[in-house]
Image (cartoon, rainbow over all chains, first blue to last red):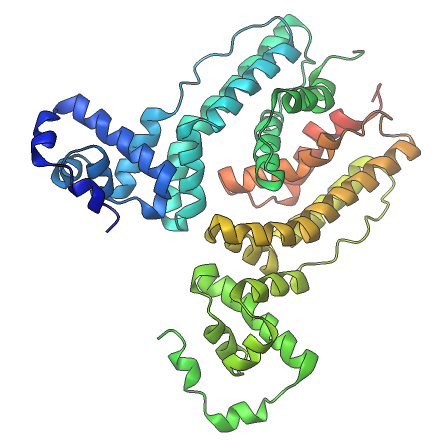
Length: 208
Length: 208
C-alpha cells in the first residue's frame, strides 16, 4: 500500500535509470537512509527502498539479505568520518570545536536515522546496530576526546592525571542525556557552557 | 490469545478475590508493572492486566481510560521516593551513597519497566512518559545532587563556584551513557571510579 505511488512510475522511466555496481548500490543505500528519516525503522521495507531507489526488489535483496543488513550498511556509509581533531591551541578551544563537530554529526540525516533505529527496533535487532554505533560513533569520538586530552597534557594546559576512562565519557554522556531529557539541540552556547562549567574545571592544571 | 490461560481461571476463584477501592487499584497497578517487565509496552493490554490482577476488564477501564494512563500511574506508584540525601561527612561519600541509591532504583523492577516503555513506545506516546520520568526520576535526582553539592560548599570541601546547572547532570549523563553503550550495571566499584576520576576533581576545593 505504502509503495503504490512508486510502483506507478512508468517502466520506460525505470529503464532510463538502469545503473550497475557501485552507482546502484549508492542509490539503494541513499534510499534506505531517506526511508529511515521519513517512515522510520518500522515503516522501512525492502520494497519501499527499491521503489525510492527506482530499482527492483531483487536488486536490493541480491546485495542485502535483510532489512537489518541494508540499514547497517546505509548508516555506516553515511556517518561522517571522525578521523582527527585539529589543534586550536588550547584544551578549551579543542574541546569546543570537537563538540561542535559531534553535535553536527548527531543532527545530520544519518545521525537522526541512527537514533530512529535505536529508538524503534526491538532489543534483538538493536544488538546488531549497537555494533555499528560502537564502531562508527562511540569508538571514534572517544578516541578523539583522548587525543585532545593527551595533547593538552603534552601542551601543559591539562593536568597529567586526567586520563581515567570515565573522563572521556563525560561529554558524550552529557550530550546524550540532555538531548533525551530536555531535547537540547546543543547550540554553540550550550557547548561553551558545558566546557566552561565542567570540562575546564575537570581537566585544567591548577592553579587555573 | 495471550490471555487465554488467564481467562481459564474459574469464576468461583475470581469471586473469592473480590476487592474494592485502593486494594483493587493496587493489584491492577502491580499487574501492569508485572506485564511491563514480562511482555513489555507493546505486549501489554488492558485485558492482560485485568487477567493478571484477576479482575474484569471493566474494572480497569473504569479507573484508567487508556493503556497510557494506566502505565503512567503504575510507574509513578512504584518508583522509589527520592526524598533526601543523607550526610555522610564528605562530598565523596555523599555522592557515592547517592549514586548507589540511584543505581538500585535504575535496576529495580519499576526502573526496568520505565526503560522498557521508553525504548518501545512511539514518540507521541513517549511524550506522555517523559513527564513521568521528569517528575519522578530526573527532577528528584537533580535536586539530590544539588543538595549534596551545596552541602559540600557549606561544609567546605566543595569549591563555591561549582554550581553550574550542567554539573548536576554529569553523573546522570555518565550513568545513562554507560548503561546504554556498554551495558554497564554500575557495580559499586564503577561508581567509586566515577566519583574519583570525575566528580572529586571537578568539585573539590583546591588544593585537594
